[in-house]
Image (tube, rainbow, N blue to C red; front, side):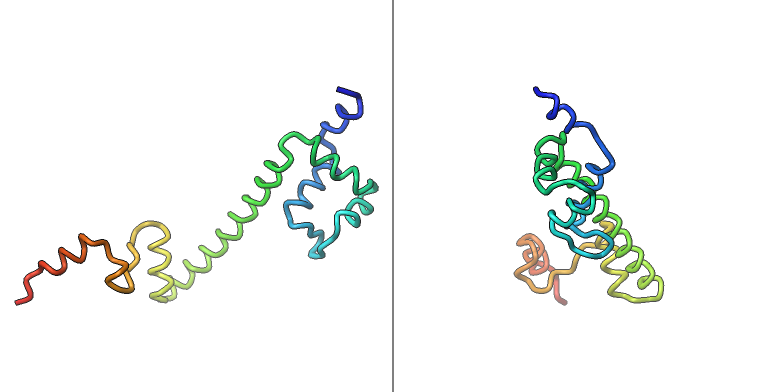
Length: 128
């Protein structure tokens, strides 16, 4: 292994910024940039960025971890909004929230969505 490859594997602030840049879908401060624009902003070449992708251990795994955390944060906000609507008496929000936490089974829209055993049990009920 040559010295330049060893140097590339060290974590630097610019490499961390690049990982976050890729994880964000190439957005910086709400503006989408090309890899070339991002490289210019941090004072490296576009070629260097691609070399980092190859040399940073678990580069894509790190990108996915950042994306996953961001996604969970967004989902959390959705659950909070759903919870607030349910507290206001919104029945649909209440049903959806209870379904999401496993406290309520979704109601089938038609008999085709029901399990065969449910249909058979329903048909066997006494209708007096």
